Image 1: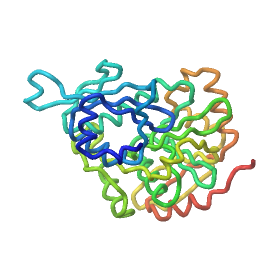
Image 2 (image 1 turned 30 degrees about the vertical axis):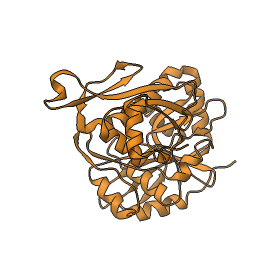
Image 3 (image 1 turned 90 degrees about the horizontal axis):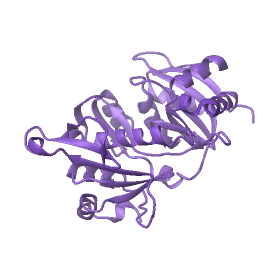
Image 4 (image 1 turned 135 degrees about the vertical axis):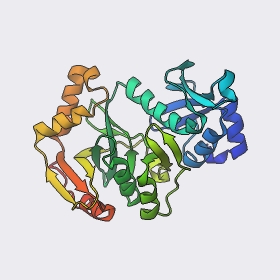
Length: 304
């Protein structure tokens, strides 16, 4: 059963009462929220995701609920709860859905230490994956969304999960987060994209989310082989350039984007070294998405 098989009214009812068990990749989240805007976003963006209602175990028990007291009426706020504990400062009620997405990223990046987790988008085509590590404002998510709309499979927009045992990439396809001008850029680049209603004045500016392709969700159990590490940088008016990076420099730059690299200690180092050794690394500058897509289509795979 998928989320789409529930009517909007039934989904709201379940979220407000017992909650739903949502499967995203290898994780199950028991999700509860009485906030209608959260239910509406789940109904839109998670329509193709399976429900695991018979599951006896959930990796994360999450709730997004309105603040109590005066905040129920005056400048209402929402709180994110994990296992019944409120872990972050409350945000305006209108930010409840972005808060859910940020909270889910936090759950995975701080709890799933059986993987080396990087702050990076990751996409796959023909069995080979490109990892896109970058700080905020680099155009990572915009590039990721454009690649996905052009035939690449979405593994993740935010969290690259590497399996230490064999170095394979484990998918976690969830909605792609866009900020500020990138929202209109994607609307123009891919008019058929399903994009949530923008939420203004968040800590990251105006944010909206792009629905993940149904095929990426269906193939969430298929791991991918890393082939390229591409450090993207959007620069207005810049020519499209793809420049190789030495392995030692690539190692350090990827490590800077590691959520749990130091937590995993020796396992983290060995996994990172294996990743660098089997991939080609590049610095990538772009301003035109069509040129960027063409550049990615011409990436040469590393030796087997």
